[in-house]
Length: 89
Image (cartoon, rainbow, N blue to C red):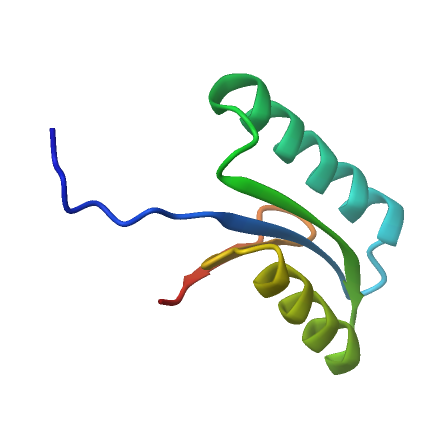
């Protein structure tokens, strides 16, 4: 067993852009969190309630929210197959 693996808690954020309906982004976020939680448990994942709708203000709010929840990684999901993951210490 590897003992030097970092403990990661990922915050999942929905992003609605380019006329992609916010409700679809939110439903995809919920489905992802539900599937992960069923398989691995809820300890290492956080569903951010803020949906970013082409706004820098929403992005700042979401980042503050996931940091407050103790996350050290961020996964944002958008339309189609778009996603991005970022980690920090």
